[in-house]
Each structure stands twice: as structure tokens, then as C-alpha cells.
Image 1 (spheres, helix red, strand yellow):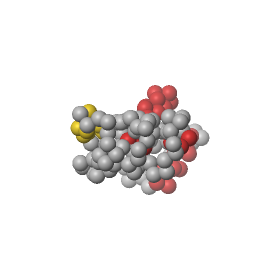
Image 2 (cartoon, helix red, strand yellow; image 1 turned 90 degrees about the vertical axis):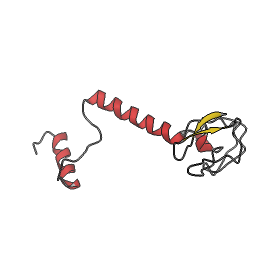
Image 3 (cartoon, helix red, strand yellow; image 1 turned 30 degrees about the vertical axis):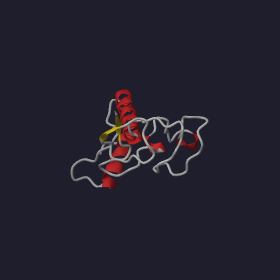
Image 4 (spheres, helix red, strand yellow; image 1 turned 60 degrees about the vertical axis):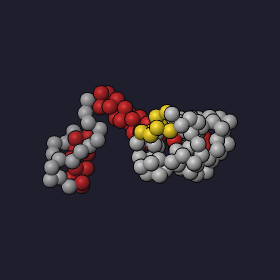
Length: 124
């Protein structure tokens, strides 16, 4: 048995290895042996897979029989971690929060005007 994180809901599951084609998450019923749950899944690569000789799979969330499948701990979590790391790096570089939160009671349009003013040195 191995602990595998569901790519869809993030829940940790005890699953026998190798992960079977019919294995699914007990919580959300997502297929576990699919591209989205694989360590090689990466939307930034051709065919969204870092394994160069793997066959192309159209439905990334459906079970498949790819011989290169390796449980990957949940692609959604990895993507969120990468985005968070990038946001933290920008904050360290520029010394400000890059999220651009609005002030209390401020409309979206007013926030945009304020940000433009800050960018071009005008006081709001």
C-alpha cells in the first residue's frame, strides 16, 4: 500500500501499488490512474506530459493504461504551490503584495484608478 493524493480533491488515500486502472478516490470518485494524477503531468509540456515517449492521451482526467504512469501527489496541489512560490518571489523582489487587494468599501473601478495613480506617481 502507498499513500496517493487525489488529483481532484487533494485527499490522501491508501492505494495498492501499482495503481490499477479502476482505482478511484473514495471521496470524489475521480479516477486515480489518469494523466492528472501522474508525476509526469505538466500543462507546460507538449501533450501535457514530461515523458517524451508516452502516447498522447486526450482525456487527462479519465483512467488510462499508460505504461509510464507514476503517482504524482496531485497536480492541482503542485500547480498551486508553484503559483504561490512565484507570488512569494515577486513579493520579495518588489517589496509589496502582488495580489492587489481592494481597500474596504472601494469599488473595482476605484481600485484600478488608485493603482494607476500609484503606478504613475499620482496621489489618490
